[in-house]
Image (cartoon, rainbow, N blue to C red; front, top):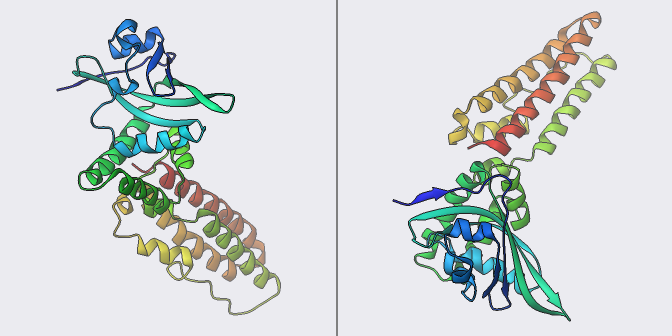
Length: 281
């Protein structure tokens, strides 16, 4: 059973390699975490510390960008010299350019959050399983499609991890929160306008008939539908539509507090929805 080591919050691992990936510099933090002496590290390929559970496609993506002279950030699992311990890093690797050519790569590694590690482990398992029966090139296509399904690029994927936001649930990530919020602001304004114009027999749309309500019903079978936030969203959404009908039926003197309550409920609904979309785990 492997034992996990962790960087301290203020520690930074720094290393450099030549253009072929051969280590020519390692700071003491690198030596301490890897449990190799600096002498043992110098002259070795940097992949000497690569953990076997790392998907090959991550390094394929990393090298594609580095060779195009672009820095890249990745979450990397390494093992120690005795292979009995491992440690996670948030790594940024920068190509060093001289006279238009790459002469060196420098890597800076810090401690990742536990949330990011938990998310990455699940994704890396999906990628490793795919790699069992597919080529690295096919795995790269699979990884790109995985991100595309979640409306993510690699950069937004990394940024979400950096901010401890979920990147696994594609159904949640595809919800257009801006559209649905604007729809409900317009819905409220439209009813207010009809009331102001003195329209009679105004019937407010039922909650399960608007686009958002229909979408909520379509998500009822998802695992997150049992999350307390999802249940609160449904309750608030139903209440907004009920409140708008109450607003229509109320006397003029009683309408302002009702519409103020609708405004607050719309804001609360989408704050909760945003939290569910970004932080469901």
